Length: 309
Image (tube, rainbow, N blue to C red; front, side, top):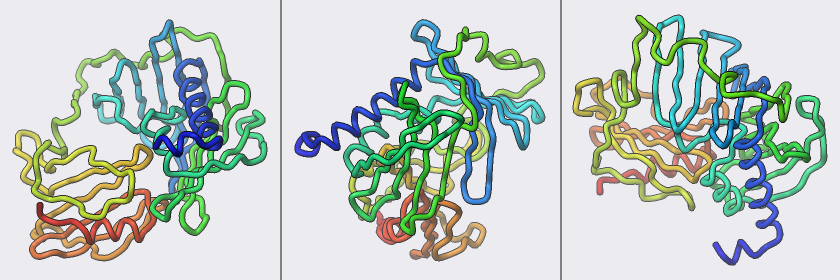
């Protein structure tokens, strides 16, 4: 909103996020990232190369099943050597850390109040803390730590309505401005290794076939807009499964599933895993489930307001 854009804090927020986004895109860096959600922890080695304006990124999973993700030119390729499988999908609107997408920048600048925190060490660097407090009870807070020299995001946290950390991603170590060429972000295997299966998004497994479902959500939090609508189906199928609606404010997504009750008996009522809240209700012959990284009463209100359109 233009009125909001005039305030100094809003301008600071826009400048901060813009700088973080530019740094993530333009700087060469290598580091180790740790993702923590609820009780699960995942460690990933990341190599990011900007070679003459072309971006290349390689993420290698350091724990659990072997996995390597290569991102370039709007495409993401995920290699699973144990299963001899490559999954190819378009880059999604939810950028990889430490990027900040234009949608994320707009959402944080509009729906949160920015507060500058103190400095602390992250990955061996002196980092500046920032707190984005929600202006309404409709979303979670976000705490960000940036490198003062480059503006790069070093750590990010999601904080729930009780002030608890529900989700965190941070660099354990990072080397900034390192000399790298695009070879440093090449996969360990050929693009299509011999004898491996290649699955493209929208083929095989449960995937969403874009379709008008006949369902809508009456009570969405401000700023949330529909990003996809379809039916879950199988390969070769016509998407006759559960209806799926996905809404986002640019920062987080809320998914809604409408399933005929003939399927496996779903838990009805609230459920929570880390920052992910879920709420299911029965409506006529359907079970309606909403889930997303938002306060439980928001997820419940979304589920309760699903109607035929």
